[in-house]
Image (cartoon, rainbow, N blue to C red):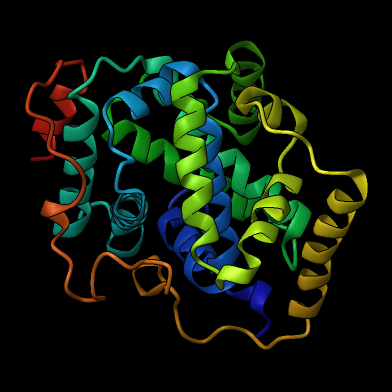
Length: 293
């Protein structure tokens, strides 16, 4: 079976959870993990998001934040929205978000990054492009997640999500000391995934994959053009090599990723993940948290 036939016969309107699961843990586990991390990274460039993350000090233990976020986002995808683990993960996400006065617009934007950034990443650096059905499945998957989070006015199509993301970033990207602090801590964490002698190069390589508006929002200097070309060329060379590989037969979820260091695989209590603020500022997300409790 060819790798791109894995979702053949599945309907992106009704089987979107299975299609998205196959794409995430079989076809593009590394790429989509990178893309979703990059999606969250982009949100720090919106001052209302970056400043809040800095003020609440949720990134002081950056590794744990990275691990908890990856696991909580993965649980509904791997186990299903209606499973006990999926419901617990969404409940935890809602409990954390409803503790702060987060606008619906910011929540919609974050949701849009989960849909748009992975597609654009795979288009640029994946061993193949996502199919129309896979993109549609991703849209339907995140629309369902958004409904569980009681997010209002969610786009109905990929084009709607892309327009939302681009317009929101054009309007809101700006430098903020808190956002820069969170970005720096995240960049530092990413370098620790590689041997110490390569960490400076990893930082430059990461900057070379960023677009100019994102670099400007954080106050980062753009690497030289030759470094940008070599870095992006290396990513496309990787994709060309992967096209010759046989299909992946075993799933590769985030929980089994070597970059996840806070917990032993198989020994994770979903209800204990994340932060537990003591002075919540309630929002309209409360209703959803109660509904899925």
